[in-house]
Image 1 (cartoon, rainbow, N blue to C red):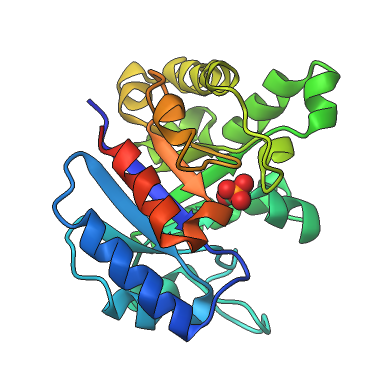
Image 2 (cartoon, protein in one colour; image 1 turned 120 degrees about the horizontal axis):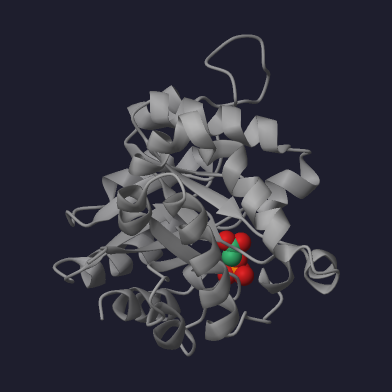
Length: 251
Ligand code: PGA
C-alpha cells in the first residue's frame, strides 16, 4: 500500500501573515492523520519561516523550483543544497509553468532532478500534456517522453526516491479537472512505463494528480487505483479546502 502525499504549491502567492494562519491550521489538522504526508511549497523567502511553523511529523517543507547548477554566477537562482539547508525535504521540478514560461526543456528538467536527489531531497517530477497534444492524439507520447527524459534505462533507480505528478496543462488553474477515469488512464500509462524497467519501483512509486483538485473532487480522484494523492495549486491557499483534500488523501 503506497502512502499518499498531498502537496501544496503556492506558486507566486501569499505573504507572511497568510503563511502563518494557513500553515498553523494545516499543521494542526494533518497532525496524526494516518496514511498521508502533507507537503507545503511556499515561495523561497518564506521557506524557513514556514518550516518553523511545522510541528507534525507528517508535514514537510518543499521548494517550488531549484537551479540546475550547484553554485556559481547565476544571479537570482537558488540551489537544491540551499533549500535542503533550510529544511526542505521535497522540491517540485518540471512544472508546466516552468517548462512553458521559463523555457525548461526535458534536458534542464533532468539536470534539476539530479541536483535535487544529489542534495538528498525528493523530487516531485511533473509531467502533463496540453489540450492540443491531447486532441492530436499524442498525449501518451508526450507523457512517456517526459517521464523517460528522467527515468530511462540506466537512470531507473532514480525513481526509487522520487514522486511523480501528472498535471494535464488544460486542467491547471482552469477549474476543469480531468475526470477520475481520464486521470487513472494516464497514471496507469506512467506506472506501466516505469514497470518496463522495474516492476518493484513502479509498484512503490507515488503518482500524484494535479489540476483543479478541490475538496469536492478529491475523494473520487484519490480513490483511483493508481492515484496516490495530489499536487494542489489554487485550493492550497484556502485552509478549509486544503485540509479537506488532505483528509481525502488519508482515506
Ligand atoms: P491548480 O494547480 O490546483 O490551481 O489547478 C495545480 C498545479 O499547478 O500544481
